Length: 80
Image: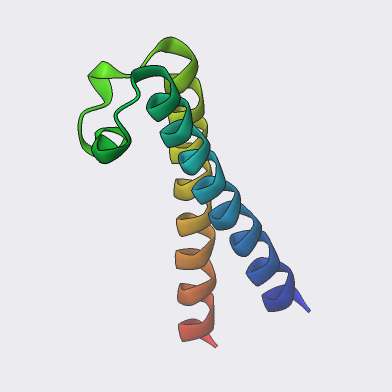
């Protein structure tokens, strides 16, 4: 039962993080009208506005939590 719960939690965190990152990218694109420079959201975060940075930080936290849960569940599977 615990592996199923861990898998559900990691999936929720990872999907939520990706959705937040996409929202941040769309906010940046609407603000600057530079749809071809969406890589700024991943590699050049200094040019993001404060609202976009909030979404970026939330996305990174969610992705890190999802990756951490996945790593812990992987280590727990090896130990069994």
